[in-house]
Structure formats: structure tokens, C-alpha cells
Amino acid sequence: MWLLTRIAIIFYISIIWVTSIAVVLFVWHKIDLLSIQGVLELIYKDSQKGTIAGICAGGIMFMSFLLAKLIYGGHQMERTIAFENPAGRVTVSLTALEDLIKRLIVQMPEVKEIRPYMIANRKGLEVDIKLVLRHEVNIPELTSRFQELVRRKIEEAVGMEGKINIRIHVTKISLEDIKFKNNEDFQISAQSPFHGYSS
Image 1 (cartoon, rainbow, N blue to C red):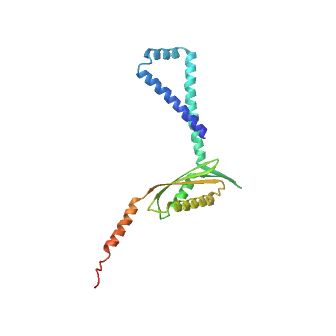
Image 2: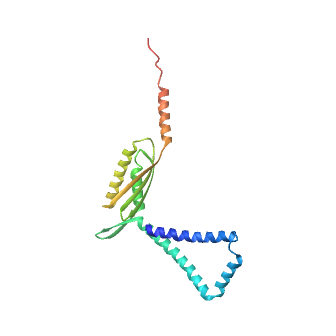
Image 3: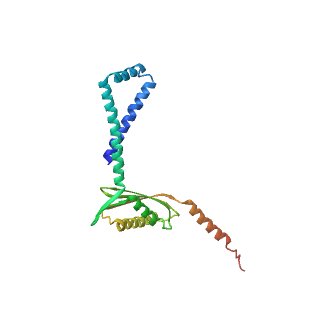
């Protein structure tokens, strides 16, 4: 998959660069308009050269279509996992597992928002989870607990025995909840009665 992606990137960058350089040279008057017109007339009038130009253009179009289809197809394969049951083959969408993880983690009081993303490859299952926390917590302890919960849930759901790599990114700790908590503490302390001193 990575090789196809690199080939596609090189292919599209080459086309963009060649086109851009030709336009820049034309704008800077480095390419004569009459020369371009002469080449186009030659291709138009000479059937052999016109056929070659048409084959080249068709080849570029076919290559772009083929690379796009291969990359998109490979990406779709990465978004599913499959296993064999006695009655036949079963395919599970990773979107379904992402929703399962979302429902599992969002119930935790420490979590305000979660965005999971999963990819299946030859090494196993790659799980990326972005978290927004509600308040300050012990992040190493919390994320370790989440990783274990997610791993257990995936294994229970699909019986996956391969490697499951779970990466967690804490993108934000919600300051609104922290401010709300501090305001509550302040109000409680402000409402406590003043007893003065006793003689």
C-alpha cells in the first residue's frame, strides 16, 4: 500500500511540475507562441504523431485512474477485518468497532470527547484515539486503563489474536470544567459563616 501511495505521489507531482514549468516558461516568454502553434499543427496534421500524442494522453489518464482505484481499494481493505467461521467468511467494518470504542470510553466521567480511528494492516490492528478530558487527572494511569479496556473489548468483539497497537493522544484538558469546579469551591468557601473569636 505504501509503495502504491509513493508511486501515485511521484506520478501526480511530476504532472503538476511539468505543467507548472510549461506555464511559467510561457508567461515569461521563454516559449514562443508560434512554436507551440507549430507543434500543435504538426500533431493535428500528421496522423502518426497525433496517434502517438493521443496514446500518451490516454496512458496518463489510464495511469491516474488505475492508481486512484488501487489506492482507494487498498484503503477500503484497511478499513475492514475478516475472519473465517465454520459457516463462512465474516467481514467487520472498522467503523463499527470505532463506534463500539466510542460508546465504551464516553461513559467514563473523565472523558469529555473521544475520536477513535482504526486501520488493519499486516502487522495487526492500529488504533488511534484522540481524547479531550474533563479535568486534571493522572494521565499515565488513565490512558493505561483505557488501553486495557479497548484491547479487551476488541478481543471480545471479534476474537482478534493478532497484535493490537493502541495509541492515545490527549489533545485537550477542558478548562471550562476546571473553572466551573474552582467557582464552586469559591462559592462554598464564600458562603461559610464567620464565627469570629470567643473570649
